[in-house]
Image (cartoon, rainbow, N blue to C red; front, side, top):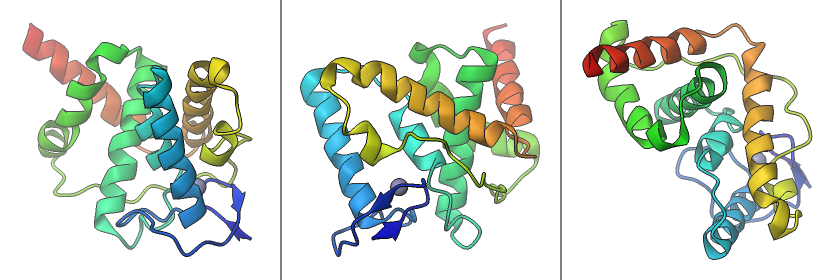
Length: 173
Ligand SMILES: [Zn+2]
């Protein structure tokens, strides 16, 4: 067995993993199965990508792309849960994070964030065990749980989310 970043204890597998995300192959496989199930059943889970990325920060200190992934996806979760960013605006907000927010902050790259020690009970392998009828609710709860775990860490994420939301409002002016 192997302990994944997200707290899931999963079978040790040799299968493929993400190019730079430090997920265990078995957890990455479960996430792929979850995506397939959500798509097949038409379940609306617009935060699943942000949740999974934010729950796998293990390589971020050493891997620039994973630092960016954790920072971007975590800021999306924060913008939704703390600042009420609606689902309909998530793709546009996500797409602007690196292109608009980094220059505005005067940063060349995303910094590594100090990750939580505890995640709570939900992760991709656990979500996969829920019946289809509960998937929409439980994937949303998973997103909330991951953001709540990060929320108590000392990070600039709330400042980032607020800054980009204000930038967008200025533009709509
Ligand atoms: Zn995992």
